[in-house]
Image (cartoon, rainbow, N blue to C red; front, side, top):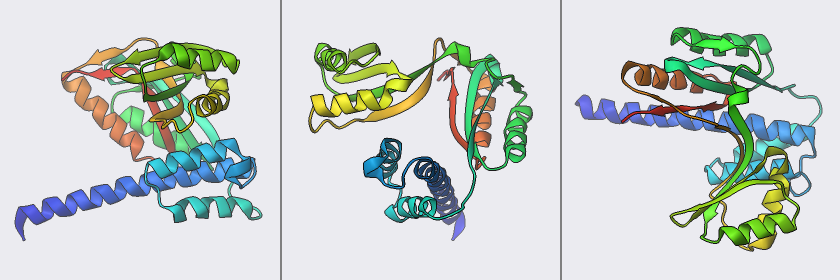
Length: 240
């Protein structure tokens, strides 16, 4: 069978691992959203948004349904959100959001990722003050003034509206996410949102190259292999 077969087999296993991680991630997020609210997307905006995101990322319906059904049952797991901050390879700033039912396991796993790449974890607030916590929406369009008008009429606290190459980027306060999303859907019926998320955006970037860039890629790979890690935010720009 030779090298070609081995390469294809490796690619298949790699793809399967990525899918497994994605399904596990959404399974936890959906479970927590349903458990903390009501297990019905129609009456739970957070859950509805996650279901929409999961479908966009091609998470199978049975994974979504199973997580919601599990949350609707008695008992269940007790997940909590935890956030770690620190300094990655090349002096980059990193925020790691996790969802866990075992804090000791999670902090050990995340700390190992930092230690194995010569990075350093910091205390809460050590780097998050260098990021803006925002609601971000991106969609096809060219009329930023109309978008701003719709937001103002809905009394949404907007940070900025940018239009570039036929794409609109709307930035609002993180706490205004659902309010802004509803205003967009009502103001622009049928609008397809390419991005709709609450995220951390760096106030400035850190360009890295060479060995630092390679180590940073390894750092991200290690974090992404951790089952409890949900999101990683950073200010790194890897030089071509």
